[in-house]
Length: 134
Image 1 (cartoon, rainbow, N blue to C red):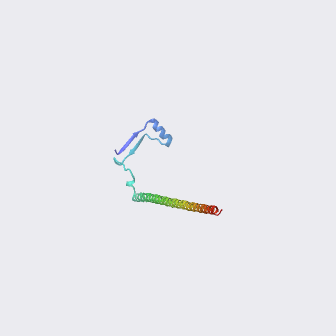
Image 2 (cartoon, one colour):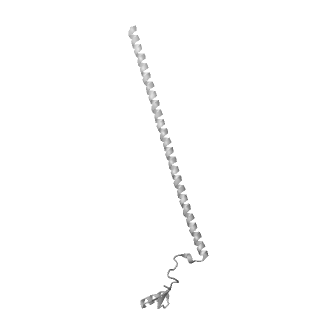
Image 3 (spheres, rainbow, N blue to C red):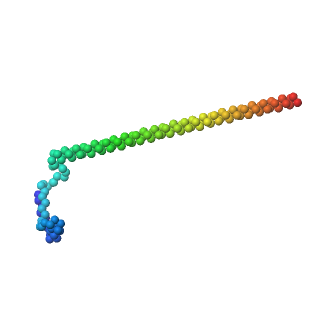
């Protein structure tokens, strides 16, 4: 399909004249081949080189964004693990402190019980001595 000519109707001619101020009775369209190029492949070497640089810059930017997001994700995972470790250490220290308080109170209770029993034993001896003497 090399060239196409389209005849215009009177209404189409009037619209074109109104819009452009020129009289046209037909529209011609030319195609150099059956498959016109789809992209800028037939451009000048300067344009092609510029497009190649633009594409390379886009790929580089995309790779940089990916690397940045990977670094951020790694940092977030590290921070999360650090927070978890800190929380675990805190929980462990809290459990140890609670256990120490419990052990201390148990020792104190045992000592108090021993003191009470010693006091009771003294009182019993005193009572027996009082009966024996009286």
